[in-house]
Length: 141
Image (cartoon, rainbow, N blue to C red; front, side):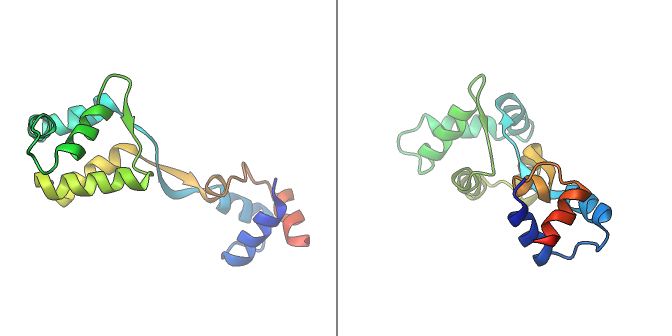
């Protein structure tokens, strides 16, 4: 446990004075994060909104302005592939798809939601599970 990192977080945040309550707060699943979306899930969603074939055609057309983006999407949808939207480049790819293929805000949000998970602030800071005793030690520094 990195107690100095924990202390910095406790000092910057608005955590309870009670160590047990503060531990529960920092361990609560409140932070939005992303995990890799399995290729079949993304492929299925794009097919369900009628965009898969259009993206596939663009990936095969040398003259299409979104050929590279479309090809990257198609490559991520190969068997055992996937895409992680916590990666800024992948988010840019989704932005390009939205603009180039007319995805709505709702469709973009639905794609992001496929990989969205909730993690704790402790996980986000790589602290592991924080206990009341960790809070007490960090505050004593």
